[in-house]
Structures are given as structure tokens and as C-alpha cells.
Length: 198
Image (cartoon, rainbow, N blue to C red; front, side):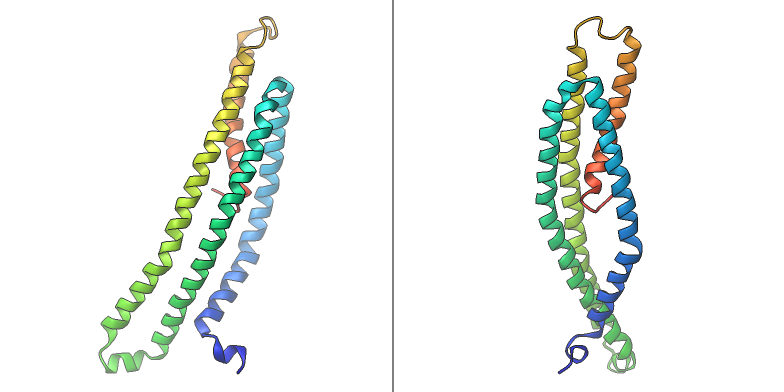
């Protein structure tokens, strides 16, 4: 028995269309965004290092912790994507079969049953998306905590510098504004490596 005889048409179409969509749209966008976010994160870490090198004692463990969090997140995200692909094929297969047998369905007045089955399959397909969104929020919350820790440690290092290190208080305000913006950029950079940019 050939592959096309044993595999439902909806599953084949779902797989081909999702693969082409990923190759054409998602991969180039994610690659460009990953390169820009990586460059930005390294530039921010470099500026932090030049201004207050003591922040490296906190930044390096935080980066290692962020990488471990992302690894933990990746395992669940892969499963959610796999489940989403599996349930999507059931929806596409049911739709293709319903369209092919529309005259028979109408003849036996089974529209309500097929409509209820379609809604049930759509609900089943939507569940992994909800859980994937919850996992994304879990990762965002942890990365925000790590970014806030780096920002607080950099601000603390700047406050603890000996008097006279900087000529005026204006530099402190500018540096804290830069650190606040780099905190957000660090979060975007870390989250982009998961493959789910904002």
C-alpha cells in the first residue's frame, strides 16, 4: 500500500502547507530578528561592562540561567507544536471529507452532527495554542525577573562607586535611562532565541 493511500489527504495538505509557510515566512524573519537581537544584546552587555564592570558578576550567571530556562521551555514548546500539527490535520481531514460528501450529508440531514464534530475538532486544535501561550508567558515572566536583576545590580554598582568617579549627576540619570532601555532590549533578545518573537 502506498503512502498516499494510507495517509489522509488532510494530513498531507496540512503538513505541506505548514512546512512551506515556515520556510517562506518564519525562517527568514526569525533569522534576521535573531541576528539583530544578538548584536543588540552583546552591545548592551559591552556598554554595561565598560561603565560598571562589576555587573559582570551578575550578568554572566543570569545569561547562563536564561539559557537553561530557554532549554526547559523548548522541550514543552516542541511538544505543543507537535500536538498542534497533529490536531490541525484532523480538522483539515474532516473539512475535506465533509466537502467531498456534502451532498450525502445534506441528503441524510446530518449537517448538525458534522457541524458539531467540526467545532469539537477546532476546540481540540485550539487547546495546544492556549497552552503554548501560557508557556510563552511563563518564559517571559522569568526573563523579566532576570533582566530586572541585571538592571538592579548595575544600578547598585553605579550607586556604590566612590564619590568623584563621575563629574556630575546628569551622567547617572543618562546611564540609568540607558540601563532601563537595555533591560527591555535584553528581554527581547533573550525571548527571540526561543523562536517566538513578540
